[in-house]
Each structure stands twice: as C-alpha cells, then as structure tokens.
Amino acid sequence: MMAETHSKTQTSTTTITTTATPTYAPPQKSGISLCLQYFKTGPGIVKLVELLFGIICMACAAPAWTKGTHWFLFVVVTAFVSTSLWCFIYLLNLKSAINLPIDWLLTEFILTATFAVLYIIASIVQLISTVTKPRPPRRLKPFYLMSGVFGVFNMLTYAVGSFYLYRDWKDSHPHTAFTGSVLKRNP
Image (cartoon, rainbow, N blue to C red; front, side):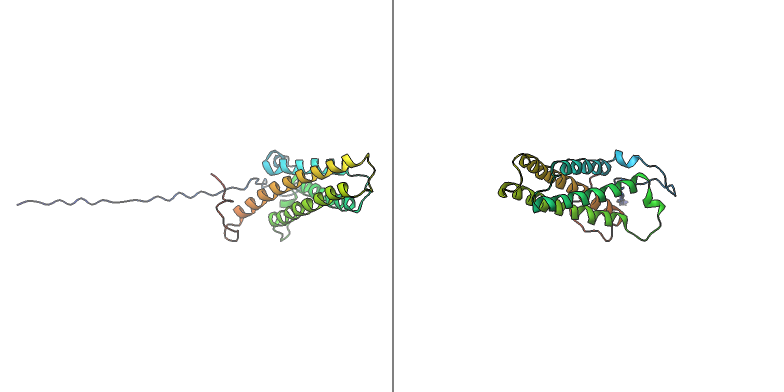
C-alpha cells in the first residue's frame, strides 16, 4: 500500500498600514506658549517667504499713482496682514489654546488659496497698468514693474503654501478629503 501524503500550503498576507503625519504637528501643551518649531518646517518657511515678498511688493509699489497700483497694494497689504496674523497664531500656539469649533487648517487653506488667486489677478493688473498707462512718472515705472514681478513670485509662494495646507488638511480628514494620485503624500 502506498501512503499518499498531501502537503497543505498556507498563505499569509500581511497588511502594512501607514499613517501620514501632517507637516507640522503642534505641541500638545494647553494654553499660550511660544512655539518656534513651526518656522523650521516647510510651511513655516513658506509663510516667512510670503511675508518677505509682501514687504518687497509694498516697498516697490508704495506711491500708488494708478488705479491698478491701488488694487495691487490693497491685495498685498490684506494678504500681508492676514499672513502676519497666522504667523502670530502659530508663534503663540493659539490654535490649541483657543477652544473654538473652527477647522483651522481648512480656514487657512481657503484663505491662502484665495490670496494666491488674488495675487495673480493683482499682479497682472499691476503689470498692465504700468506698461499701458502714461500716468505713473517715468522714475516709478521700473519699481512698479518689479512689484508686479515680485507679486507673481508671491503668488507662487502662496500656491505652494496652499498645497502644504491642503495636504495637511487631507491627512487630518482622510474620509472627507478629495482623492487624487497627484496629491498623495510619498512615504
């Protein structure tokens, strides 16, 4: 008699789950405290660059002679004040100190994306009004052109900041965020 042996094969599958952490996780301290770690991260550096480009734009377009420059300065100053307030919120760790039912990341994302769109519109208006209008004195035209160019740079910086904020918001709200292969975080 022959004994038949059957070998049973078992397959095991292992599932590896990775959770993506946000770009910046605030310290878990309650209350107002000085927090400089945020400005060492990518989004913090982007905020500081936004402020720097905003100062350059305001300095170059300061004596407003045309309506386009008035609009440009309105957008630049509004974005500068808003970004300064967000810097103070992160600097003093106010997001964890204030208990309000606000989705801070979504609010900041919408505001930053709005400023990116307003910056490109204002920069185009600034460049066109400088080139086509005879009103600004000749000595101010190079500065007006430079302010428009730095406005485009600041728009790109706000777009990068919007991308960081969207990615962090998506990581903290995985079920309500949009899905897309382009915006997935690399491990």
